[in-house]
Image 1: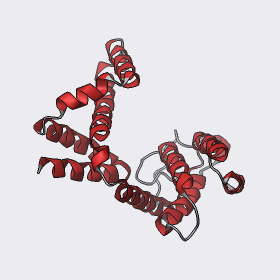
Image 2: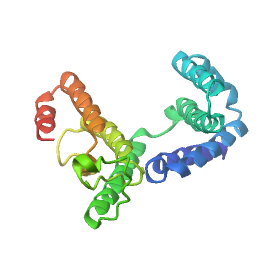
Image 3: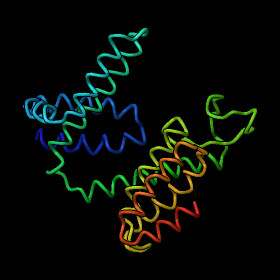
Image 4: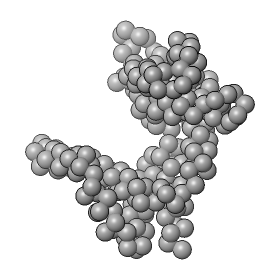
Length: 226
């Protein structure tokens, strides 16, 4: 029963992480409780002890908190990143038990929904503009979409990662219609974020795909069009 609850919670977190990020953090907190009840804490610590990169990051976070001039804000950041680490450790244990194909389709669907909402924002003009997002003296009042992720640059970073994974799996337009829709909508939304950092990340991802993928010509043409 607990194992099923853990799997269901992971699926919900995967969806909420894009559609309602704040809710995803509450989901990870619930996941931690379930993992403790299922007596997985020792296994999680074992995974942690073998991952020096995560240990180094935890040490850096603790030092940052100790020497911070704003302890409350730093503690909040430390707590949120710690929840992300908990999610990573549980995934490391549970990933072999999860049907990856079903999860992959879920992630495609979630991205499509986020993109549809982003395009709705642009078409309807229902966008909250913060001065920190657009230099209005230089660029005027660009409508930068951010969908459910609250900030155009964060949305662009998500889309760049999504496109990198999606295009790595892409074979033809009709083979996986969900993936095709995901790539088309993500491409449109990435343009509408007007994020320079997002495009740099996207370009770097496409360069790696061109070098590693057997049919890199198609990726090169797509990247040029973008």
